[in-house]
Image (tube, rainbow, N blue to C red):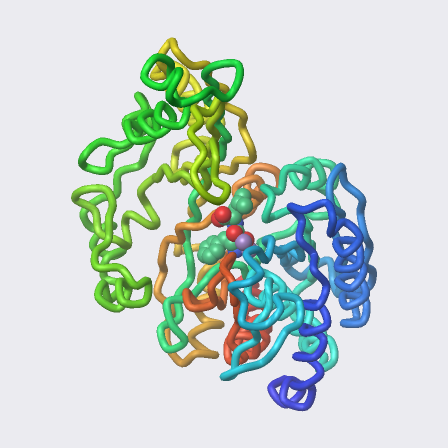
Amino acid sequence: MQSYIEENRDRFLNELLDLLRIPSVSADSKFKGDMLKAAEFVKESIQKAGADRAEIYETAGHPVVYGEKIIDPALPTVLIYGHYDVQPADPYELWNSPPFEPVIKNERIYARGACDDKGQFYMHIKALETMLATDSLTCNVKIMIEGEEEIGSSNLGTFVNANKEMLKCDTILISDTSIIANDVPSIETGLRGLTYVEVEVVGANRDLHSGVYGGGVANPINVLCEMIASLKDENGHITIPGFYNDVEDLTPEQRDALNAAPFDLDEYKKDLGIDDVLGEKDYTTIERTSVRPTLDVNGIWGGYIGEGAKTVLPSKANAKISMRLVPHQTDDAILELFTKHFESIAPASVKVKVTPHHGGLPYVTPTDSLEYKAAELAMEESFGKKPIPTRGGGSIPIVALFEQELGCKSILMGFGLDIDALHSPNESYGLFNYYKGIETIPLFFKHYAELKK
Ligand code: BES
Ligand code: MN
Ligand code: MN
């Protein structure tokens, strides 16, 4: 198996580079054609890897690619999930090389989607090819690569629900998360959920002269800022009534275990160029970014932002606000609490509107399941070190839904690193991580089949 990977090393990389050249940005309709191109590319690569079939399924949004290789119905079935869509590459001017013209520098692939998630799901297709070419596949494989993860997977739930029989499996394996370091392998055992809203605050029916009217009527930007500022208290607690009602408090043992993971606060600050961190009182940075809920403004706009100064009292102000959720919060309940509260704190001098975007439920998986053990053994074998269980701060909306619809847990065996700069300019993925993934995935199948016997 290892020699097959070695012999095909360059081709495995060049194929990924071809995939990275397709600007499959799901959020922006101008890339709709490229989304189809990427789906076609994924379908063909699944076929070429040796699958029995691979197809493109239309949805109300971007298509889903599905393929399978059933070798023996008596063997366990693993469903692979990933996403071929990527985040917008903006701002383009901050890239050192064009985002959709991948380059290799310092043993890293630089391109939008290099790690999230093209580089990571493509490892699975190359691992499948390797297992089939070397006659070493030990499980049935189903593979579903979607095109709407970065915009909330809102049509995938319908697809999964409508295709339960086709997607039926024993476990789900996903590479779309990170490890602590290349010499500190880890497995994420949880993801945060998400409620994402856009708010609008409207004052007068038109923009006004800020001298003539200033001081007399509400400035929606001022009001919005005050409203947002009031959403957290001086301890960094979110002030929305009921927000923490369902939040699971960790036991002191669980907290200790979480905080025992290698983490260097000084390194963290240095990497980000900050003098200090900021967050909820009485929690560590690890806890704040994984097992505690958050509320953040992602964007805010309104008024005059052109050159020079314009004395204007704007009629409108807007913001995009996200809340990361933890077990057992639900995106629907938090959306309702947020909306009610936000409307209630608005002064009578303005009108507010809350529009929901996408959401997703949080997720946790136990570390004593067969599938977790299989991932642990696989990584231990390939990295030479037992992986540490961690809790992730990001979200993959479909994972909790998989559990509801298909009744099985997902294993988050990701190979990314923090330095990969997901969603940022100059996203990259290490060649080490790409090949390590291709090497580790077959070991997961091997151990999983053995443990399931
Ligand atoms: N792959 C990420 C999520 C991730 C990254 C989890 C690193 C853990 C470690 C995924 O593509 C992502 O960005 N998800 C979005 C979800 C949203 C758009 C619904 C997120 O977390 O913001
Ligand atoms: Mn991803
Ligand atoms: Mn992402």
